[in-house]
Image (cartoon, rainbow, N blue to C red):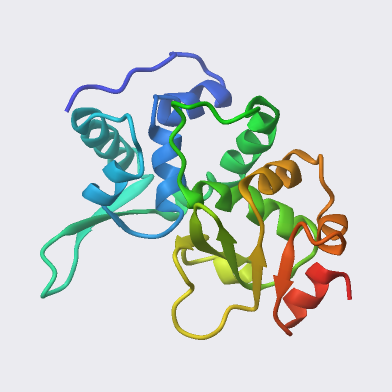
Length: 215
């Protein structure tokens, strides 16, 4: 394993960039906030990364204490990668970067890849900022479905996941489009106003759903 490059500066920002400043590292964290992922799943959801670079980044992240690698129990034979507690601490870093980068999105380019769950972290920030409380929210976009674990629901396990939430009904179901998510994340749209105007649909009878509807 090659030695890690360093800025060789006695500065906390420089030390942080030593660990996560390489290309693809923070996007790998974004994917692993959904829970354990196989190498093939990571490669599929990181279009543009080479197999060599992905393998190298995962090794570096394991060495730096950001991820662990474990084998699935029988009958599974695959290995999965998952974040450590230290790695999960990067969630607010990614959310802050997403908030800062929102105005840079503009119109989607023909060359831009997109995955529905890439909108998860901005929505977590928006919904928690609206005081939604603790719970599971299913999100339906044209690009696909994913679910969010808000507040205490996401403190230990995955922050989000693809598809439906699994066992039990979600506390709320949101229906909207990608441009609306971007508007909410950038602050160009207010969540309550978007709900009132029907731009964001909210289904459910839980406390979470009622808060999101402003009831």
